[in-house]
Length: 322
Image (cartoon, rainbow, N blue to C red; front, side):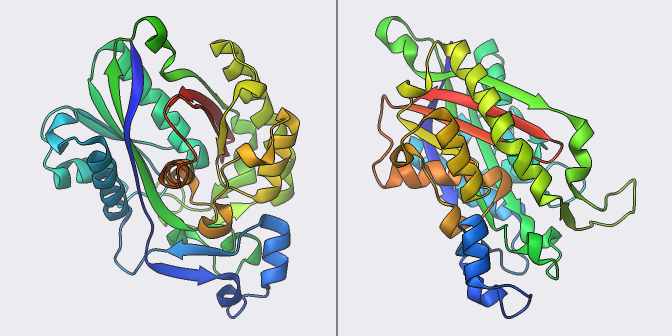
């Protein structure tokens, strides 16, 4: 039994904020941001535009791409660190808006690694036979938790959502090498104070703002990403040279370039959207993949590698035959 991708979709808010725009409100410049991150612009959610609304738009696009109706979905797993409310889960809001009354819906919180964690979770439910079809969504409104006076962090993030439709299929013969082939997930709470939000219901009773020790995150990122990628490839019996497309979490161009070099991957095989989207946390991988599908780069039969690292630290990788 394999989890096979049936459709992909995404959503980006209308408002574009460029590096030049940010230079008007914080001590920075387009040159400073671009040189250190590769980011030139990001999308910011409109006032009143919720994480659930962005996730819903991405989910509808993925369902349309799959040619399915909402009622054919029996599982929704939403990766987000910026839910509409402390509870209920934002996934149930999307479930209700889609008119789905059967199955289950819940959120997964692993920050920037969230989409990989959510995919692995849905994959295990589908392979076990507990559910038939899943919507896996990454949706974030990170602009709501940024300190817009902190130039080290406010320039890095954007808002948006991406979604995939997965379906459980029993594959045989040559078709057995399709769908999700392997996943690896890791976390190490010793590093939780390197990337965190300084608020929460049980600590301060406030939402808080994102705080990051950038050099420490960068120092750990390439090594941890490379290790978990190696584990994932080994599980599936592949090597880095077999990869058709590398779709990493869009955190920082220098991190992406470093990971690709360590794997020995041709830069042309790396899908990179950080320049236009910035870091959209759990939404970055599905948005990047949607872009590469829309422009024709990723085709049926391609071997695609996903990876991410986020606060916690959490990190993980997933290998899929498209």
